[in-house]
Image (cartoon, rainbow, N blue to C red):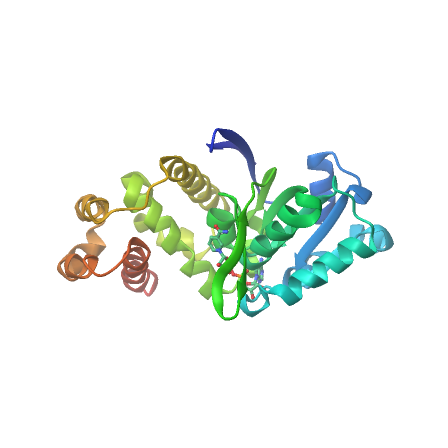
Length: 290
Ligand SMILES: NC(=O)c1ccc[n+]([C@@H]2O[C@H](COP(=O)([O-])OP(=O)(O)OC[C@H]3O[C@@H](n4cnc5c(N)ncnc54)[C@H](O)[C@@H]3O)[C@@H](O)[C@H]2O)c1
């Protein structure tokens, strides 16, 4: 277990990394000192069926658990899902001091946080990310959103979580495409701030492939610490920063070397996410295919 205190926006946010195969609901209650009647769970449908429905804890406490299930697909990050959540909150007379607990990937995190930020003008919020993207990115930083009229994240708020509980045990069942694509975010923060993190990523393809728990704990903790520093700096990455990253990458990331010319040309047109996505692509294709 790793307990972090992320510091940004002049506040401290507990971020805990665990590797737990027991029922996550009972872990959350014990860990946060809550009773079931204090909690409203919003859970990804797939995660619910894989990790919760068959657990002893769920079977025993089924009637006392207040739960809203939402499919974790981006087409469901909308008003329809939000209204379903508000109706469940209303039906169960959830007060303003209810703890909204969002268990799922970035979609559930964003919509759950949006619901928490608006129900009675703001309730407690606990993020329990189950995808790598949610673990390293969307469960910290306070951005909430739903999509509207085909516009992505067009309605949203800024609202901080009280805590993030990151259980890397969930990653076992995350589809490979979702798992690997989240590394683009880690590579981005590594390129911007940490050559040593970059080195770790490029030198450990086997640990990435096998989802080595100790390795993932280290990567996730380093990524969220860097991300919180970037939030504090509060400025968009400039082209100059991107170019500095390229120089650092050239020294620490030999796999990329042959592609640097291409990347340099592209960096004029690309933002850093596209750039880091390309880095990720080169990295994955050259290393993981071995
Ligand atoms: N708020 C922020 O700062 C922020 C940052 C980055 C991304 N986002 C948002 O996050 C969303 C993308 O997040 P995502 O990549 O996690 O996608 P997602 O939530 O759609 O999850 C991807 C898929 O994996 C499934 N899944 C999740 N956890 C699983 C598990 N443990 N086992 C099996 N299946 C699992 C989901 O049901 C879904 O089908 C986008 O809507 C994006 O806008 C928000």
